[in-house]
Length: 293
Image (cartoon, rainbow, N blue to C red; front, side):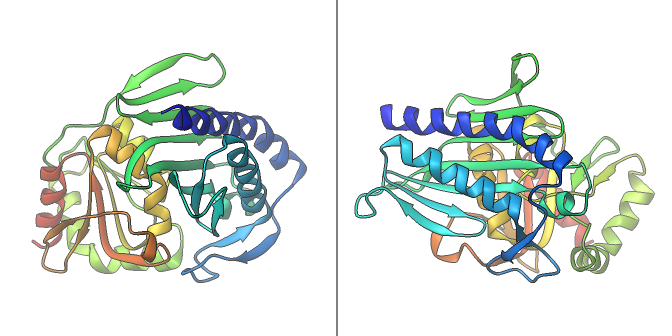
């Protein structure tokens, strides 16, 4: 456990340094340059920019100070830190989620999200996230999830929604900002959106997603996150929040069967054809039933 304390302490420092640096970087125009493609993604979907690279390098620098052997599964690279023959932890990470917004000058949804895994059991043991726009930090462990207001240091315990049915007060997240994902949503959920308009006209869709979806699910701000062709690199960094909050994540078949999603390091660059992260299993089932109605 002392090893985990070393890791979590360095990751805490990592988030706090970025919280101070990123507004300054944005003001100075730092890190908007193209660096590379993202494995398993087309250039029109996502790319690695200079800020991604900076955040990733800073993360590796911090992890080297832990004296632990870590296998890092970042959105852009996989690498071993320390003794690769005896790995203590896996870390799944999106070092800077929101690079597409940042490079276009949009000050919205800039996050860092990561999960620490026990390497033997492949189960989460800790997770953290930083919301750089709202100046909020999230931490997840076996006791649940906490929210820290960075400006004041106030800390709150947070809990997910317990809803079991879609209703007028539901908020469903979905990334629809790129033409590809907008098209998939429009094609596959045209009937679903008609039902929402007719039966639950006051419900709302939150049109952003990816790794940053999971802290908000843990906080109960959204009830579900629904995507088609969702990259695992957008899912795996947030799974520590799923574990700590008792949420549900599923790969869904065309016929509506829910299969619980699991982290698989051998498939990290692949995508899930139909994916649902939900506050409860019943809420996910209700979404599926409405989609297939």
